[in-house]
Structure formats: structure tokens, C-alpha cells
Image (cartoon, rainbow, N blue to C red; front, side, top):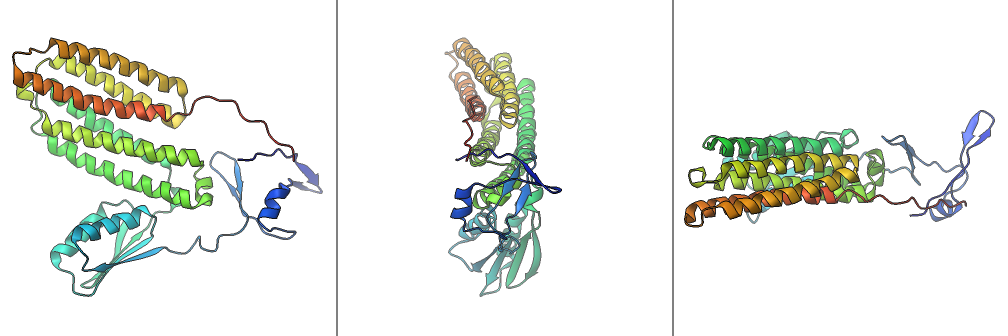
Length: 335
């Protein structure tokens, strides 16, 4: 990406800045051309070659019913949402059955900002009512992180108390909200990828867009791993609880530091996550050695839990690894 330095000039009461001639020529601009200027959240500006006449147009998707299967139809709804469609319609050639209509509406309600605005026996219309310009990728990611952190704390407390009979449904329900926020973030990121003006307003560079996509996926995966672990754990056969909780607390610290490092682009904080992971590995290796090998059921329970905890821990290492290394800024061109 070429970079240029320009000196501000004053003509009368106006402050002017010249634009690179190569950019002017490549976009066929001339005297009198109008170029939109957007002020970004970080107080930088983005200049575009022309007004986007399609910016205010509503992107619509019509999905025919009946479909090959209801799974296919629901996936098309999710796909349309993630691709940034503002209006999603289910148009039926045969009257919608109650069961199918109910399933479609339940799927739509799982998508943040998508509201059903019209419905009859042959049509269900849902519209995305949030303004993408007002959304914030960082806030959505932090919201996902907070929910996942709560799920993990409750799971760890269940292990500490050896009581998880009532926590399984609670954690599973929270994971549904993680998925809702994940879909919203992916929609926002994909929209920014296709619309550089939106990316500029959100202050997201191309590498930021990619990193947020990966980070969101890692957080969503961590939530799934916590649900799987909570459902699979057999506390009645679990031994070495104190050691497991000690390891679990380290994973909790990794989560907190990795997300903070990512959103703040803090490389030293990122390196700290890797150090905590090394401590975590020391604890779980010690726990493996302390397990009574003569008690097969207890050994399997401990090893399965450690394996699942390690999968969660690796998510936080991967989030921390997204933090860009410190590097020198390339010199500016004077042109």
C-alpha cells in the first residue's frame, strides 16, 4: 500500500491538501469531481473516488418454499444474514405448514437485529433493523468474551464443588447467546470486507477484519468446548480436583489476558499468555503423574477433562498470537 505525505496549504480562509496524481488519474477524476470524505472513529479520514449510489439500497434475498429440506432452507437464512442481506423473505408456492413456519421463525430469532416484519400463510419477511455504522466489532467481541468467561467460571465452580447437575442447561443456554453475537460479528466483518467505506467508518484495516474473523471463531469454539466439557464430565469419578481447579484458574487468566491483548494490540500482554500456558502445562503434567493408574475410570475422567481444558487454553493462545508484532513504520513518499 503506497503512502504519501502532504503539506497543508491555506488559500484564503480554506485549508487545502493536494491528492496524489496517480490516484486522481486511476479514478478518472478532474476539476469539479465530488469525492466523499469520511471521518473515522480514530479521527483519521478516508477519501473515496465517488459517491456510492447503492449505499442506501436494501439488499434483498428471496428463498423459495418448499425447499430440498428444512435444514437447507434454514442454512440459506443463516447464509443470507451472514452475507449482509437486509431483507430475507421466505416465499411459498404451497402454504407454509405450522411446524415449518415455526422453525423458520425460531431460526430468524437467533439472529441479532433480524426482525419479522410481515407474515402470512405464504410469506415470512424479516428485515435487519440495525445500522451497521453504529455497530462496533470490538464491543461485540468483548460481549462474546464476557459470556464465554461466565460459562467457564460456572463450569470451574461446578468442578470445585463436584456439582454440575443444574449447570449444564444454563451453560448451554448461554452458548446460544455466544452464537448470536458470533453471527452478528461475522455479518459485520463480511460487510466491511465488501464495503471499504464501512470498513473506514469502523476503523478496520484489511488485517483487522481478518483478525476479528479468526478471533470470533476462536471464542465461539471455546464456548462449544465448554459446553462439551460440562456435558461430558463425570464428577463422581473425578479425582485430583484441587490440581484440576488450579489448572483451570490458569486457563481463566489466559482468557482475560488474550482478549485484552488482542483488542489493545498489546504484544507484551500477548507474550504473557504464552507464559501462563507453560505454567498450565506444568500443572496438568503433574496432575497426570499423580493420577492412580490402578483406577481406570478415574484416570480416564481426569485425562478427558485435562484434554478438554487444553483445547480451551489453546484457543486463548491462538487469540494472543493474533496480536501484530512490533515493527518499524515504512518511510513516507513525497510525491
